[in-house]
Length: 410
Image (cartoon, rainbow, N blue to C red):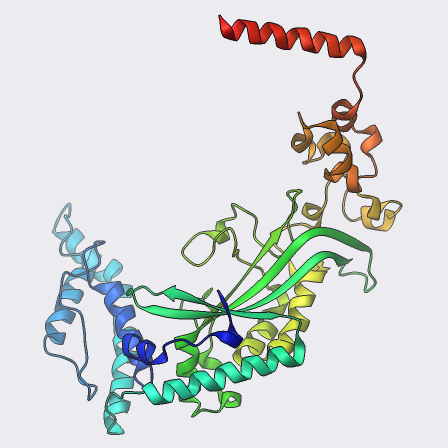
């Protein structure tokens, strides 16, 4: 990754390899259509010529034959049937909704094609405009950073689905050894402050080619970017941006709004161990609006709210008691909190297995038990693994180890 202050991508190459300019939306729709209907990866794809358009926004030759092949495939004529009735039944029932979806997609494409032709437009070389749009975007982001300083901005290369290089602009909000304010929906006051050791971050990734197109469509006025052109990659449409997070700590703790290590939300090409799905809850619209207006100073307010507050009305992915182990010292005497969130007894603490067979010194000084737990003195796992051995126990252990070593040499 490179700091945006020193990053100068090859926008000319970007414009040549990716879809930049007014034709971007229509070519993207056609690419999505081809990926869905043309190929041989499943029963419903036709082994036909991919759809394409001319510079004047007409269909390239062969489009009608392609659609005929797609329709034939969607009727499932290639599948075996138990009888003639089944062939008809597939067309009447199973094929009906597929045909409606096909009709909707083609109608959307042809409506845009007709609009371009009606305006007398032709496909353009938008390299100069793309360079201007990038400079506007870069200057805007640098100004945001200089006026805030509470986030960092980096750029990284990203290879898209057709093998061309795009770029991801990363806006990163970091939190070190922070507290989560816990409130219950029936009470406006803070009931507890949950200390979270470690480092957490929320990262917003902007796809450069997408935002250049948004700026071009807004006629080089960032303030006039249409919100409808900005959509996140968690939705079905191809995204202009995506948001993810990560909470790194030594104690296997989880953040309420960041997916767990093996959570189902982390499946797929977007998320990974370092960039996990986050639940935005009731803040979804506010966060999306800030990204749409490229207002990352205001976004800080809502990211702070997401990371540093637990409001039971938002329904997060992880319960608040995943953010600590046992009965931590910062909750001692907080009966009002424990009336809502049940206490963990030492016998049911999820952290017990982490200290088994560990060195006593590490358990006492570096484990979650040693640093934060208020009931460690009554925890059998803690006392068993930290108690000092008598000279007899040490001698017996030495004899057992010597016997084991002798047996291994035989």
